[in-house]
Image (cartoon, rainbow, N blue to C red):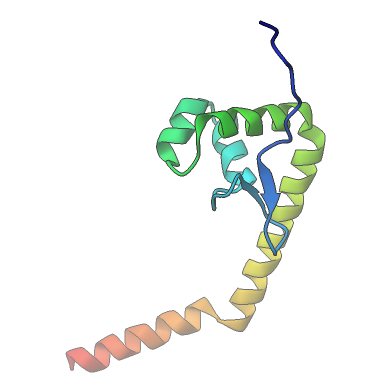
Length: 111
C-alpha cells in the first residue's frame, strides 16, 4: 500500500464582506487565531466552537503558522476596520444620549 500525499487548500473562505471564515461556519479566522494565541488547544477550540471540526482547526492553525505575517496584516486591517465602524456608530448614535433617554424614560415610568 502506498500513501499518497495530497496538498489540500486551507479551510478558509471569504464571505461577501471579505471576512475569512473557517470552512462553512460563521467562526472567523480572527477568532481561531485569537484563542490559539491565548494558548488554547485545537481540541478546546472545537469544544468552544462545536460547528468546527478538529481537522479544520488544525489546518487553520497550520495556515496561520505558515503565513503568520500575512495573517497578522489581515488581522490588523480587521482591527482598524472595527475601530472605524465603532467610531462611526458612536458618532451616529451617541451612547451618552441614548443612556440619558433611557434614564429619563425609566424616571417617567416610576413617577
